[in-house]
Image (cartoon, rainbow, N blue to C red; front, top):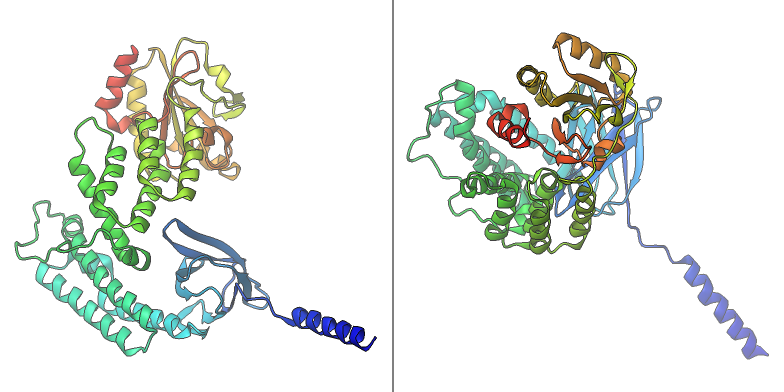
Length: 467
């Protein structure tokens, strides 16, 4: 009996011990106090790298002037806290709580709490030095070559001295010093183009002894790709430049870019992210959807990326050339009433559809050229249709834009943004403007037709169609 009691007590003891075991913490608590801030939300944004994106709205209590949120982050590293257009750089680790206190009207009055406070305070000091020396991009890049190089070197040396003096963690220090170097190289790589634009001197060229920012540049550093924004930007820009040089007239630049990444970048982290970040948009614009998808699947080794691009591919197949066009229904017509796709078909006319929005500057640049095109093809077997993807609250602005710019053709208002409008999402419309050609029978001729600004390319397409 005594043995039985002892066993029972032992069992209870073991169970009690198990209950008292604390779960391993897998989150961080982000808290903050912001004086003179009147908005309802702030946003925490994560840098894109290796397919990683983070974007979360955090509720701000205006009564207490504070916020608190429990976060589970996949990646440790650099984040930005967006407070009504003001950005605060943050370094976050998965389980280390972080606090921030600042005055919205005086960003210099800012303090951090937590294990990473020294890193986050360093960011504030770094920005102060940067703003004192750099001043503004326009002034910086408008400098004459010698002055520009001296200023760039002064900035690099000052930031390097700062980061070394702050007694930061060894790994962070190593990455930050390299990022300062890459940022300096990025300034050098941008100088000629930016200086030309700012000064208006179209003949400007840097001198023969101007430092080459891409000398000994490593195209395949996964570590730098993850830890340096400047490195990622330089790499992407250079790959785009190489792709344009390789691309022959009439070839698909989006395909050439995939091939360029495949041949120039060997590191799997950098390669997979470059392929994916490009494919997310360019799969919508490629002229050879099937070949683009085949090459992406062959080049990428990231299964998550492959699944995402496969979803886009399967959707885009339904709106490829020759497929029946998705139909919209009861869009508001500027001239009164509503108009559906079926109302525009059956007249033996092609439809040239312009998907646009009042907030889109590139859309507005196309309007004068579109009006001229409508005049040239007036009375021919084509109808020009403009579909606004502004939200419902922008209806009056839509009407005013049509009046102010004297827009012609059939003007329709969807009342929804493109990412909320099913008809637009069938075409996977991510950027504006977007032009679509549909034949008289309602079948897709081109899901991504040339814009009016592409002139000859569009006219040649019309000629081939007998318009």
